[in-house]
Each structure stands twice: as C-alpha cells, then as structure tokens.
Image (cartoon, rainbow, N blue to C red; front, top):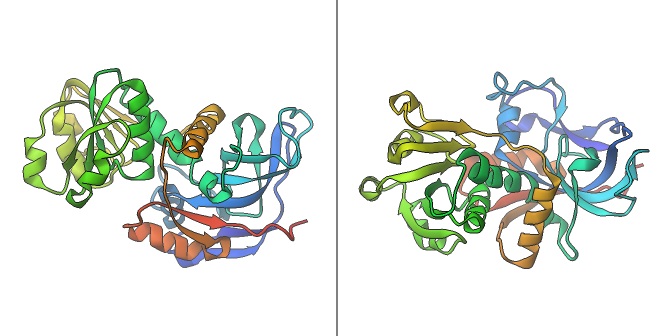
Amino acid sequence: MRAVVLHEFGPPSNLKYENHEDPELNDDEVLVAVTAVSVNPIDWKIRSGSVQRRMPVNLPIILGRDVAGIVRAVGTSVKDFAAGDRVLSFAMNTYAQLCVVKAAELARMPEGMEMTQAAAIPLVALTGDQLLRDATRAQPGQTILLAGALGSVGRVAAFAASEVGAKIIAGVRKDKLDEARRLPGVMEAVALDDEASLAKLGQVDAVANTLMGDITTKLIAKVKEGGIFGSVADMPSNAAQYPAITVNRIQAKANAKTVAYYAEAVNSGKLELPVERILELQDAPEAHRLGEKGGVGGKIVMTVDNENVA
C-alpha cells in the first residue's frame, strides 16, 4: 500500500508518501480501505517530536487518528461488520490506503454522509465530549467557560453542554463573538483577546480549555473555589496557586457509541463541524503546514486513493 511515513522528527517536509507494508489483521480487527482522514494537532506535535517525552513513539511511524472508509475484510471473531460497510473511527496509523481498527471501536457511517465529513468527526467528538463530561464533570445549571469554543473540539463540547443542561460562556477572539453566540449551549461569549472584557467576567463553575499558551493562567483565576479546570491542551503553570481548584487534563479514549452519536448529530444538522480544506494524502506536508500556521476555520481533511491497492 501507499502511506505517509515519518522517519525522522522535524518539519512537515519529513512526511514522505511512499510504499509501505500492509497492516496485519488480527481476529478482533477490521481492515478498512481508507477514503478520507483528517489532520489533528496531535499529528503535527508527534511529527515535530515536541510530545516525545510525554507520548513516546517509535520511528518510522504512520501518523493519523481519524479514519472514514469502507470495510475490506474482517477478523475471524468479528460478527458485526462485513466487507463493503461504510465506517468511521478513532484509530491509529490512518495516513495510508489501509488501516486496521478494533471492531469494538468502529462505528457505522450514517446514511448519506460524505466521507470527508465523516473523517472530521471521531477524534474531536471524543475529545469534546470527554472534556465536557469527564474533565469538567459538567452538571445541569452550572456555568462553564469554554475556551476555544469555535474550534471543532469546542463545538462538540458546547453541543454536549446543551444536552447536559450546563450553561456555556464561549471564550473566543473578539471578532468571533457573534458567531460563538449562535452555537448550541452558548448563553454568552467573551473576548479572550480583550483584557477589559476578560476582567469583567465573573466566577464560573468550571473552565473547559482547548487552547495553548499563557491564556490558561488567566482562565484558572476565573474558576470559583471548589471548581474545576479541565483541559485537552495546555495546563495553567500557576495551578499551584489555586489549591481549591481541581485540575484535570484528558486525552481522548476510543468509544464507538460516542463517535456514532455525534456522526448522527452532524448528519442531521444539529451539530456543525466545518471542513475548511480538502487535500490529497500525498499533500500531507502542506496539510501540516496549514494546520500549524493556524487561522483555518474548520478541519483539514485528506482524501485517499485506494482503488489500486491490492
């Protein structure tokens, strides 16, 4: 098969589109012919080597955590999927024509959903849902400051809050306030890049953070005593100054039911997860450059040509 392989940590140009051995299929796994994958921050963090101490990987490696595609074959113990099924999943090593996924972690794609849209869902759905429900332990009636509400993870977290019954204050740039106020679950928005606006914000029950950088040191100060600072990104370096605040960092855990649930929400129009750019798999270096640069108003998705794979 063809795959994007990382042989050495470094810049996007280190991603090489080349021949690679096919993955081996175990009894409880499904072989997926990949149609589309999305690019996530964890991909370029692994590529650069910046998270090697916290999340060590062995090189060479095929990156990628999201997959949408068609079942090619199933392991001997798999009963719920068959060749030809359209599926999506949070997986590993998905920048390739083929990948294997545990059957228990695989979800069926909703009828009529585009592969490029499906590929944008799994990791952000799991991350946003678990940020809101697990990291901040959101309860009905609570007020939660959601930092980075217009990112894909933030959109999922806001949607989850609307179902829990929590009230979201969307933390975004000042030129995005009106857009943020239209998200499900959002009762108000605050400009995180405006010191005066942030200073006027009162205490909240929790912060759900998706942002990097020093802004986290300002956000934790907005959490009331006994509250929670939950994050999927940076943690506040001054957390020790707030011993009465619980600090939680989470990483997404696979859950096929959660992925399927949010796929249905997107397909029905209840939840919007914009796809901003669609490239081809061999354009992975450019996809990483765009993602790291920032300012992209939605997910970057790469399509995969797997017609000629054996």
